[in-house]
Length: 359
Picture 1 (cartoon, rainbow, N blue to C red):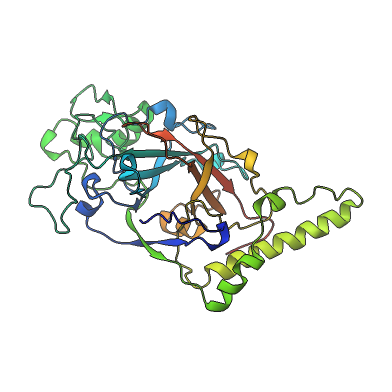
Picture 2 (cartoon, helix red, strand yellow; picture 1 turned 45 degrees about the vertical axis):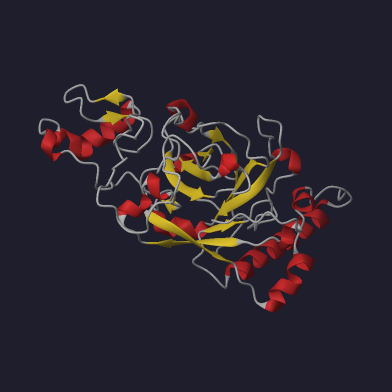
């Protein structure tokens, strides 16, 4: 995924759209540097994986599950020659309270071209003769949770052949399949994706192409996020007047959202580093101070957003409750600061639809 580094206004930066496609399993392994949705994470750095405490949902304290990853190198910086952003989410519908991001986690990982894990030259486009399956053990020797693919340091006490990140995941896998296979090591395999994971897809990208008329009106119609975030400021004379203005503004924002995605309704991701998100509502739009700085001291900038269309591919609908969002905006360190082989936490902003909006 190319990163646009030209100095343009936020509204004129090129937007790259993400779509889902089926792919062979080998194409989604770590050494292919994939962008993908679902399945287990294809870890970039083979060491310093996020700890269980870093992956826990801040509401139910259960481990979050891999949602997607975006391969987004910044080629002008050697430290970012390989660079991937990872997003995790909780699978408990009750944790998805309105406009709350506590059930999501985002991590950034980057490596120079010369590193300890991958060849200097890019991988071949054809299927390798010898496949290295990194679903249970990484090339560094780190063991992974058999259920979710995150760091797994708890081994089955009976067979010692599989590991888990926590007791909860061991219990789920025991009921699902490990109880039957525990005494027969030959039958144990993590090749099949279990029902606990989201369905796996490759994430492919294409530049957004807008009709000429839309391009001309884009900047004129764009709404500054500061003005939307502070929409009611200075309107204390009449609460009814303020509410009416807000409802009108909210309708305009949602109509803009629907019009913008109409040309490519299957998009599940919009990438525009340093640009602005396409909001679904005038409500709960962050001001600059709402986005925390990186620990290195640099500001965090918008990089990409996850669209509500992705939900239809995740098979999460339930009659009583469901995982849900309007859009998820990911903000990352403006300097993409050097964290060696570590996975650095970044910031996510969850915005829900307001009222009876629907895509």
